[in-house]
Image (cartoon, rainbow, N blue to C red):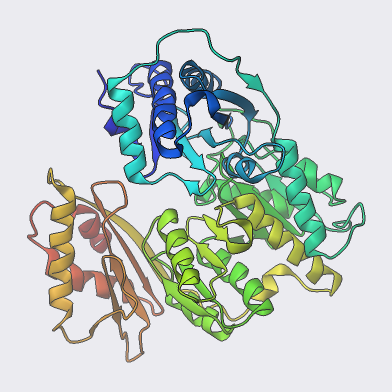
Length: 503
């Protein structure tokens, strides 16, 4: 029997769902569905018969069967289940807050940008996604209890995606302060849905008056035949960039499979993701209200911090992981600090105005409103990025941890670097070091013009290593110094670092 805890990935269930190596089977999904209702009765104090739960899925091949199995497991335990069919992760949360729906909880069947043989489950309450401890409890219940076959309330098919689409359309009109039928008339936008769940966004833009010629891969196809639906994937970004250039569009949009992440491309085909995406949305927000704090993950660049400061904001680096940055932004607001945005370099972005929901489509909608406003003034969205200093060199390496207790082995390696940095000449522990160890360097008589960050992965037995330099040769210089400190460290595979330095 499978150990259900091995399916845990942060706050999500995730695993192989196809072929001989499948671990997230229909039977497993049925048991987890039943366990979720059992847990939910304890969480809410309601009887199972009083609960209503919505469930949706992305375009993955295994999605329909896993949805049906999970829904069956919830229904067998007595809950009313609404089947939304094809949906997006943000929509599955928004249904909890929308009049006429408001179920007690919701479930999304998705594995985000991962390969087509993977799938997973995300769980939401009206207060937000469940936490890691909650998921462990649900999986423990699933391990020990399987819902028995019995008569139950029929699973009801309902549609929510059209309602969510209307919410986005309302945001466009509200942002442009108009009630005209076609507020985006004159804007040319290419949409790349990557054959995920987001193809309807192109239809929405046409209804709002935008020209969408050149849009691609809008039809859901769980094989993902054209490219991985991932805004961080180089091939995916190259594909949408080419589509924008070929169509002569004003900009392009690309979503991941379940649409909680996005990136854009300007009319010149230049990618606006990672640090550029953070800079862009930060500039838009700070232009409206200077002085705000922008929470990001830990791997953002020094140039971004400078850019945010020049726009009158405060850059607050926090831990990697979208729940981490969101929770910290919420905490800062509760402490009286004005913080409208939590965003990761991966493209996860949550705005205070949107219930702190990490929603790629809401983010792109805000960007489109600004693009339309600027076009009316004869300007472009990418004009806002003027002054963003980008590194001359950058690299990301992943150092495997070979110990059974990989978290402790990783902690010891990070501590070793931290101890060295405390006394080494030219090594400066970053003042906003909140994860792992971030070291700033003064390269070629400059000031803070290079850095590396060594941290423990959120989920995997890996030490991700990021480094950036504003001068040629700076990354190699810093990483050679790091290798000298780490060389001989037990249980840390330094092969990727040595290969990079010897290339």
